[in-house]
Image 1 (cartoon, rainbow, N blue to C red):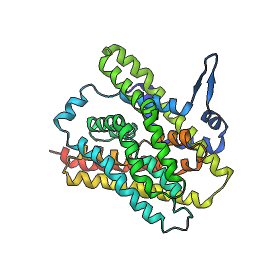
Image 2: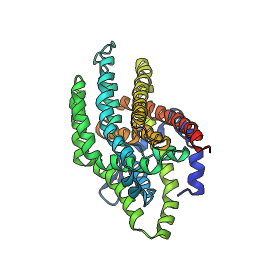
Image 3: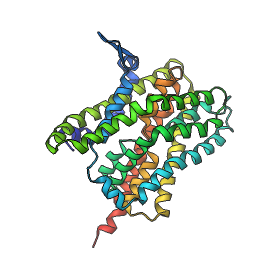
Image 4: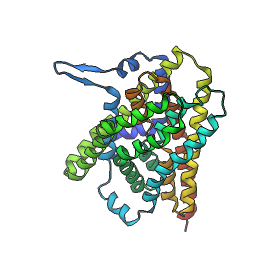
Length: 345
């Protein structure tokens, strides 16, 4: 549902993300305050803003699912099944290669901090924002929606599996930290912050009368996009605040370099798989986007929740978030160019 407000935000999304990073750099105070827990008197409940904003975004993603999309996917499941397989295969392929390269650096822990952040990114489900990029280009929207939903609903199983499988690559206390993070996901984070909001949105899309659903979509869509930008700002405040308080020049160089390598490999493997499977241009674009666009917001929230003493791990997460959007723009542009000859008579 494209409301005037959500369409306005969509067309200015790139500039809005840059503005959120700039605000985090020059005005971090409100974001740092939002990162903390906030009691809700007179109850004994506590509001954690980051998980709440993530839930809002995922609820909106489920709410936007076309009701007939699952039926269309069942008739042509090849891209969906390939995407789910690659969602597990890419981390198990890319992360060991990056670990091998980081072992050759002078870092005392073999780059285990950066590697932990990368693992927490690639283990996350497909980003809900990937549907925005399929909407901008000529990609296959039902396939992308299916990949977002399937990877999200399976994340309480797939994410802990990937964290356990990749933890032996880490040195020092990072392996134990990653194992504890996997336990947190199984203990409720993945269910309450990821699966339940997305499932609630999907259920609402299926059962609500069309008039009520339209009204709800009109209200939720701009709120979710605003919440996504606010979440970007809050996460950036945590990363940039830590980096500026204790400057680590090597980290400023290494974080975007490692994030760029992982992002490039993920998108490249997705594109290669699409060629091997001989998918049509629209499905190939969706598969490529799904392979490279992981839910970096979820990994940032997870780091904030489970690793509050390591805010520097947010820096490579933020770098990956920017890089995957840049790569997605190139995929969409190339997809349009590839689809143009096929559209000519």
